[in-house]
Length: 403
Length: 197
Image (tube, rainbow over all chains, first blue to last red; front, side, top):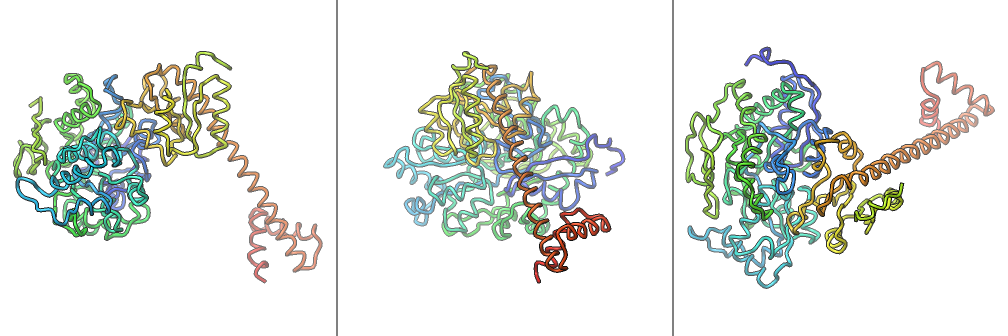
């Protein structure tokens, strides 16, 4: 690729936020392996603790750009009353990579070890049902946490609870905590479980505080986890800087798609300035393993977290539709679909992804919408790379309204 | 600047810095806002919100418990609006200023955002004043430290070279000028060398 043909960056120094989550890998790699530098950018990675604060800092311009959870750029006001958002995204950073972990004591009661799963009732469903029996005795007593109200983690936690006959609004309390405080809160007994991105599930299991009952892979595979978000205003002021940013991160993601490189990435990401955790804690999720629920052993799960494969970077507008529907359901309101689609087109900028993919010579889907939860195995998308299995654990299918 | 229309705005303040909380609370009361509760940390906040039904919760952005406010939309009928989202049309700079100063506010009950703005304005002013006071305090402390270092270095020099105080001072100044160092740097060097003996 000829870098000369790119227009020069309007702004060379860029502040980007990141959280202590394995999903931050593409940003850290882009920094440490000098992908940003190659694109003429001097990047400061600013370690953040709270998603709410990330949102506020990007909106206020303290951060130029930051990863956010996939629904965050869409849902900035309750009920989408103004139907506006200051944010846009042209690149998804990761799919999957979260899990549900419950306190060890609670898991003992559920007795995961003796669960006999079957095709009709897989282990995660059985675990939810057993939790449901416990909650029948202690209604309203359990507190669970996610890192942001409108997030795949919240939606998936709620879906999983529902599978066990638990009403997420009435039978349990779901609160919001920063990801890196989850394990402490679990240890102190302030919460009984959480749904959050790795490596925090691994940390809880390794320290004997909790057991992971299910990863998000079976609950709803290919769930969009994080997106690279800027404000629309920022993008209009610095379009070329934004393009260069996306190109550098896409190249880092491509680099990360090889298993050998991921092995190389582990010690880099573990460093004090980044995740600041032991390598063996970070390694499993990054290498594509999720936790075995019982002993904290590993089960091979190459799709546990990934970037680059299966068009993971493409901001599917159908995914945004799905995320908004989940949000409407959570807020208990009937969302206006035509207004929602305007918002989606404004925020999920497939054109920006295509612009960057064209520079890098990557294939790109020719459509912005796909059905979700309907594919039992890998399939080929029009003009795109291979797409993966994307079933939901509850058998739900999501048919895009616009195809 | 008492304003009777402010009295209808119920506020809960959460701040881990008790002195700053007191400053903010005082000025809000002067401005006739109805401060229903002031908390030093966010634990118990959800309960307080149910009890007092505030229109606005104002919290230090760096407070470790701040995210708990985001939970409101999951566990109650409230959909709290964070301040950053409710005035992006007319006055974005003032909101940015508030965020950069660490003021974060949530509108919990439906209320005219115009009524919340003055509240944020006064909190912002207090946050900035508090920051300035802290800077002033730390520079005063720095000056005191510097003076102590200087005195100790002089005493060591006087003892070591058996000279008077003005002579010790003069020697150090000469050293500083010859080496293009500050007096305090020279004093630190003197301490590093003589203090071990």
